[in-house]
Image (cartoon, rainbow, N blue to C red):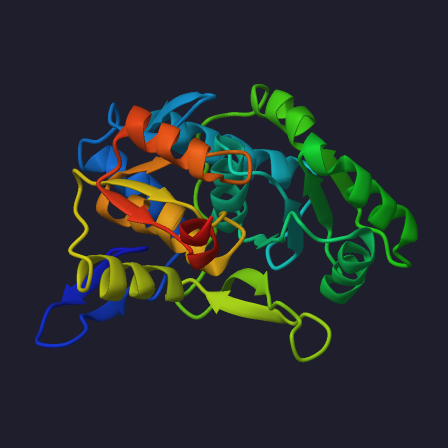
Length: 279
């Protein structure tokens, strides 16, 4: 098998996925779309603007180069308190492509929670959107162990413009750590849950494709934010797996903003949550 490739064995029941010995999940989820002719197709749509697959791939590479330039090495963690925006994609996939482990955090948490996660993860990088500066900066001041680098998303975006748009994927394996999520903490302190490179395509294929029947012409809109495992699948990994389009809503969704987003972007797959339906 070629490096970073996947062989899918379709059968009655869940698909079986077989991975190349050298496998970085950013390649099939980002780079593959250029070789399969989707460069000009829209990967992301939002009120902030549209992003094609070519633009997405270029900015993912710039993000990977930026992390490498900063001296971040494979295996180190990057905590993200980042709103639903194109930069979330660039940071998340750029980190994975460079072998760095992104850790998206719930943007509704308090400074004490972030301080605990900074210490628990021993993160090398902490990135946050300006909207969450208050709690993020208080957490950074309170944390006993400090990350080596602290970045605002806006500053990181400016840095991307200075980086090359080509990057060779770090030679990971299917079982290498790809990213973390933190649990909700319902049974104590939140726990970092480790997800491997293989886990992302397995969930996308076995649920989005095998169960939902998702395909390239689908437009995905998730009420749950990208930092949730549910929202990350629905709003990012599922559309990227099939070559579809993700619709992002930056603020917390309300019934009015949800209906307005649906009317404007016309998603074919909508992923809601009970609290929003009840509203």
